[in-house]
Amino acid sequence: MPKGGKKGGHKGRVRQYTSPEEIDAQIKAEHEKAQEAELEESSGGAAGIPSKDKQDQSSDESDDEDYRKRKGVEGLIDIENPNRVQQASKKVSQVDVEGPKELSRREREEIEKQKAKERYMKMHLAGKTDQAKADLARLAIIRKQREEAAKKKEEERKLKDATAATARGVQSMSLNK
Image 1 (tube, helix red, strand yellow):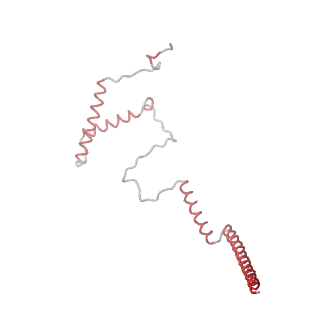
Image 2 (image 1 turned 180 degrees about the horizontal axis):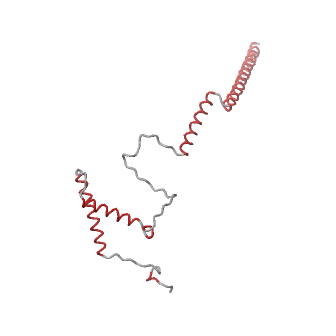
Image 3 (image 1 turned 60 degrees about the vertical axis):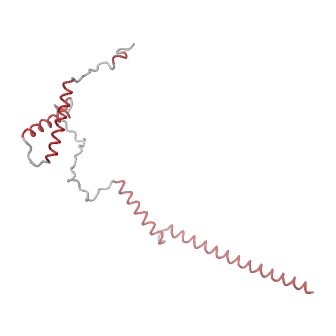
């Protein structure tokens, strides 16, 4: 059986257990924060200036949050990475909804492509493009061919009618005799 076996889990890992007292303290702190938030919402900030107790607690909380956010050596060393972009959250009052929206490169190219297509279609319908001119010339040739075919058909039909009439005349003459 390998080291550690099924009972052990990963070797070398230190297991940390939270004591029940710490869990109770965390729950109590969260409960107090919730109550303070409810008090602030219900008062609506009418006083304008929070009491010293609240100021002291809020500064302690912010220090605790800063300490919790940094883990390990990060708390000791300030690292400033120029490539790291921190998202700055904006308030609703700061957001400019009515201002002009910056389009991305893809959106700009898509709009330009649509406009170019519309311009080409207008010029094509007006007959100003090379393709439109070629299409119109082809159309004119086809019209002439159709007119000639129609004239030829008409002449053949007239000729057939004339021969049929003469044949009838010959038949009627033969009947009269």
